[in-house]
Image (cartoon, rainbow over all chains, first blue to last red):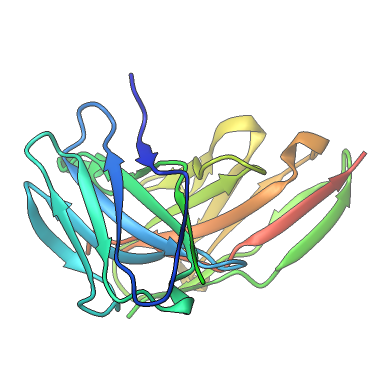
Amino acid sequence: ETGVTQSPTHLIKTRGQQVTLRCSSQSGHNTVSWYQQALGQGPQFIFQYYREEENGRGNFPPRFSGLQFPNYSSELNVNALELDDSALYLCASSSSGGASYNEQFFGPGTRLTVL
Amino acid sequence: AQSVSQHNHHVILSEAASLELGCNYSYGGTVNLFWYVQYPGQHLQLLLKYFSGDPLVKGIKGFEAEFIKSKFSFNLRKPSVQWSDTAEYFCAVNTGRRALTFGSGTRLQVQP
């Protein structure tokens, strides 16, 4: 069973640029959630995708957007990068049925640095 | 909106000491509760979870947690820690609204 994978591992961008992060969900999972983890903090929910539709969103501005593809992989796009966007971005996948719906499996994350 | 508080930000223990990490949440309805662990250089891993039933749940690596509804708490325990338990521990709540709400984490350092 393949776990959640994310790419790239690390990324350095400058303020104002745009970035795309990628996530492949665990086999059998059709739901992907994205989280931002700032240094010394717990992960904060950005949004979730289920069946290629946004299925819930946290308190993040519209310049954070995403996609989910038919194979359930997902992208997180951030436009007009700001210094405060520097963080570890985590992807988590889950299945949508029953109690297991709420159990999320995390990938290793993408470390984004904005200069 | 729900929130999660972890009052211990940094805990230092000697090997074989007992561990209890506090977690309190604010939400009046049905909750699903989780403890995740992040070992140095590794991704978040699920330690244990509570959905319903027996409020004392056992997880991997000898960890357990007790859900006390009246106290809105879900404290993590281990009778005897090992050096390999050095990691960051996160408590998380899901109220069925799809998102996990995490606490700020507790960094555990176990000294040999």
